[in-house]
Image 1 (cartoon, rainbow, N blue to C red):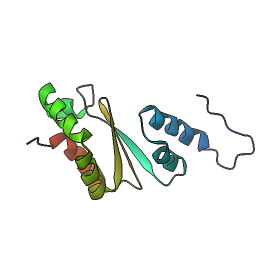
Image 2: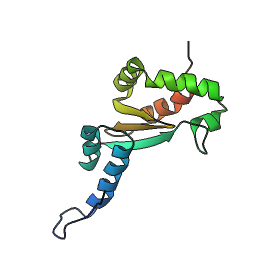
Image 3: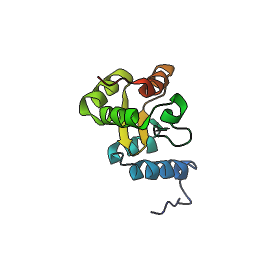
Image 4: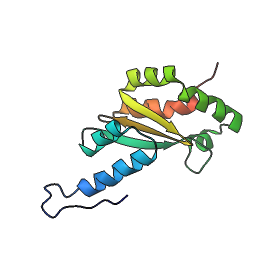
Length: 122
């Protein structure tokens, strides 16, 4: 895809936000959520959850078996609905990353994202 800007465009930062929208669409975020980022009404954060550098598993010493169990828990519909109710953020899982989209990130929301690394499977 190509992102271009018209010369009479009123917002000079639209090209940066359009690149953000393309990044979100490439991570399987629904278009209606990605467009909210383009409107500046929502922000997003990409959280690495795998064993790659900077990932939550690598930071907290989570084994691969624990990671797969927690990833399965995060992929569940019920947990997504509960986290949406708790944080007012959309949560989208793809591969070893999670995309969190919300109106404005408050310390409560960041705290909840960091707690995803400490989920316990029953």
